[in-house]
Image 1 (tube, one colour):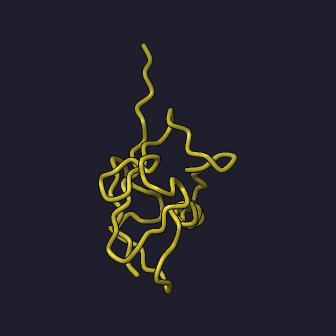
Image 2 (spheres, rainbow, N blue to C red; image 1 turned 135 degrees about the horizontal axis):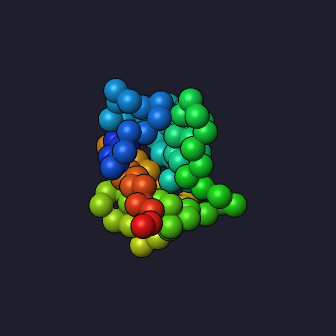
Length: 93
């Protein structure tokens, strides 16, 4: 199964790739984010205490915010789905 990844930053560990391959027919979004974090040479936490911090990350599945998907973080990803991860800009002055 292939899951495509889009982002507004270079995802550590995936510098030259736009997708990940899995030897499964489906994987939950939560499992996918944990695997993505594990692949990074420097740990990136997309989840904290099992949740996505909306002040840090915006995550979509096939252009739909994950929290609007039926399963939320437990949404099952399937072959050729696209996960979009955007890092939220931190304001300052």
